[in-house]
Image (cartoon, rainbow, N blue to C red; front, side, top):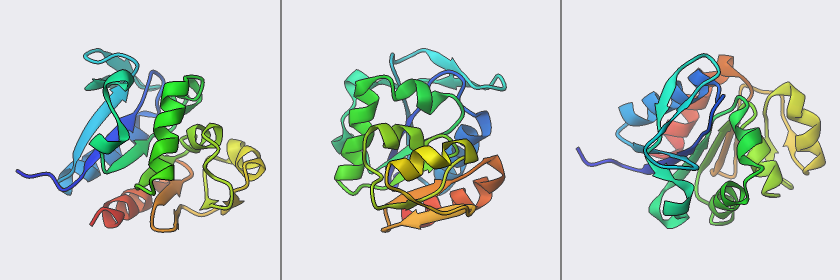
Length: 172
């Protein structure tokens, strides 16, 4: 089957399991290819609730031109990834090139560090609201926010159905 879009997903240990598994399933069900990117290829990371996730590619072996969109699941994963300049630069390049970026819960932390949210409409987990506002975000406490037909953000696992609907719609 020919995939419609190729989506990079950046994760590491302690990702919020369903914020990875559910969007990935929705994307694959819609015909998109999802590639999991972490520090090293071939291993696996473990979600907060024990889900094992196979890593397809190392951050050193990918470039933005290889992909059509970026997914940033939440949990503790984005906070760890933003300490690594390679992931920050990768996320920044997606935002700068106006490619679709999907971030849920704590996912926007990576975009805050990439300094790509100033002036954007977005949402995220309650505990990062002030960080997002300090980064220049017009924070909206809604289940899903789509900004400039590029950035899709949601707050919590409860928002996954709306998040999945909008990320799949944006890639149509």
